[in-house]
Image (cartoon, rainbow, N blue to C red):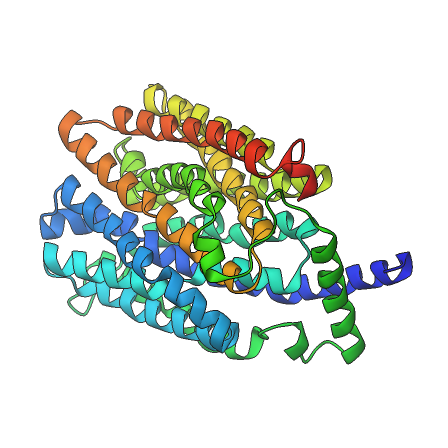
Amino acid sequence: MDAALIMRTDAILRLAALRLIPFMCLMYVASFLDRVNIGFAALEMNRELGFSPQVYGLAAGMFFWGYFLFEVPSNLMLEKVGARLWMCRICVTWGLLSMATAFVQGEVSFYILRFLLGCAEAGLYPGMVLYMTYWFPASSRARFIAMFLAGVPLSVVIGAPVSGWLLGVSGYGLSGWQWMLLLEGIPSLAFGIAALWLLPDRPATAKWLTDEEKQLVLARLETEQAASHVPGGHLHGLWEMLADRRIWILMIPDFCIVFALYGMNLWLPQIVKAMGYSNLQTGFVVALPYILAMAAMVALGISSDRRREREGHVAFAAVLGAAGTLVAAWAHDPVLVIAGFCLAAAGIYASLAVFWTLPAALLRGTAAAAGLALLNSFSNLGGFFGPSIMGWLKQQTGGYGTGLSLLAATMTLGAVSVMVIGKRFFSTAGAGKSL
């Protein structure tokens, strides 16, 4: 492509990003809110239903076993039937199951519904990363993945104060935590239906692009793919992907990051409330770290694209997250504790956003559909172990310091592992430059 065509294609891609990324981000807001609002429900639900910290931590983490089992089949179905129909299915089923959680009666029903919620949501995140490979070249993908993933902290910024307020609502025989789960499931149903109109499967089916614009986008993607280089080559087929150790070894840093992310996220409301805040005040305080996390994600994504460097950005953010978690674990001043959580959230979420440019640059076609889901499914088991071990350590020690220190240790391991993996498997002298 000559310079004029490249500039025109960039303008088309910016238009595509403006049309697609905000809606995708909102879908992820609803998704993440419906998987973690159980942290706010626990402020009243645990007492009302007699759940111990260990029972709550285990149930909160059960989500990820359903997620683990259905990630790969879900992404393969997206590749087969298209993003429009499959994302509608995902959103509607998880919304209904999230709402059904309002009617749990004991430990068994709590475990089952959390597991089924994971089954329903499986495929959303790797499906959206796969979807972005259909639209955006790898050279600009970090910022777009970061913008999409900003839906995670945004869900807390919006959901935490709203959830804290809804806990005070009651009526028609339902407690506040039940109303919270019911009402927060409704947006997922709406977004699922809207996806039928707002998510074209690929550039070729986008009604708001002319035939010429579609060809320019496809030509840009093909040109970049032909010119890109990853040591060991790209992966295209399912069995080729399964036999490649790069996919399996990338699970180490991703698991570490996710372990810390959910270990903090699903316990933060209870940690903050234990400082003496009301439910409503807890909602506003919990939102603070995630405001900083949103800014950090986008800033690190832009920096990574500009410098064409990946693993160093991930490692830097992971170390930042580990440092913040240690401050939150052992500081005694509430202001320092909240500041520590702000630093922790910024580091954890920013590291995750840039990390996903590594596997996305490696995979093509069916390998991308299955590989992204496989990586996410195994790594997201960190979302089971993080909250569960936090609950067990809380029950054993009576405090949160030991559990938070463990989260910091996993983030440090994630930083070291991504540097080793990046230099060894994604570099010609260093891999980031080629991505």
